[in-house]
Length: 578
Image (cartoon, rainbow, N blue to C red; front, side, top):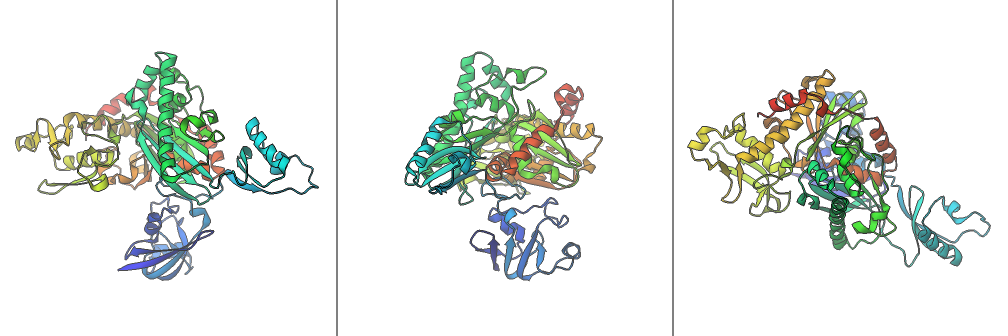
């Protein structure tokens, strides 16, 4: 039986949707891109997801009643299930907790630093200079020249500004109507763009692509080595990054006819941001591993090279250290890790595996070289998460495989989530042994032929592929264990593990445990937040307070370099087994 749920949102039209019987309010809101704060992972313990409700609901449990304190107009969204048509009122601060297509974020206020406003004729008695009257600043002659035309002609106009900095000025009939901003994730393997309409408060385009720099090398070390050969090689890597980002913008503009993309935030690891800026990254590759910069960098001079208007403001997210970059500060800003209760570990699964421990409002970070296998690269039939990629896989008791592909077409290979599913299922079925080898019985039965497990004639998993998975998961698992040991903590002390990454929503907790990416013995909740890096970049465009938060994170996170610890290699070897 389907029910009608009416969502009342401050400042927006009421929305009525049909939801299946038995679905919680939180699940229904997630389907609309609205995520409420839920540090307890939806278990009805923290009381953070309180919403105002009307209608007929299933009665609250005793534990929920304690949190409600006798209020009959409130319910926990993670627990409340309707018995008939119901209404929920969502607070304004929660409306922007997850724009569609982005990773999950903790709730925040919609207060974008980028604004496009109408400027009318001023009172003749106002003697203030126009820039002071508008409370803006600018050192750009072209923009000031545009503004002078408005003042000279005493005409109506539009001005675009960010953090009180004037970006553009136009006469009303010439100026743009939309106020757009672009959030970029410059990953080692993949690129992502979220184009956001700040007036409509929604994502209008999402684009992804392979990082063109992968043609030079699949990891940051190989690109550092390439860049060290000559200034021309550094320029080449910068151009590849710029072309990749410009390609995303071109696709987004083509689908939306967007014109005024007035601001952009680019997040990425420290090496990627150095290469984007055209800087020699050699110091990142040799002891004592010192970056050229870690603070937010203004790259507005590159706006046109990534397909944006010349007036667009382009900035990067700040990094923390040589191997804990702006993608991590951005992710931590998105999910507000330090505000989650208890002891929490945050893992960003990517080519560079970054891990952050949060305990008592103190953040400690480390990183490890996971490699690109879990993103579908360096795998015989691996591919990005695009049409034709196997993204989920299961084995029946009789070993009959079932799988889904992106786009529902015939399989061409498998992406990261599909790869993890396949390896996990083969481990459970004892086709893959704890050491990572195909079992003798599976070879004897003919299930494994020529060292390969075939899903189709053309799509298969090889022994080499399994080794790549072992290296990736072994590095992450070892780093997680070392981080806990450094603070005399055990897996039983953990209250939650948060998993981020471009394919995070598509992973299954039981499969991460099956391949031991999360060390054996952990039994607590696992929360998936998707591409938190991109979500954090978007928040920087949507909430002016986010800039202060991310700068504070970058300056206060403690970093531990496991590469200096001789015990890491020993732990890594132990964690290679399944």
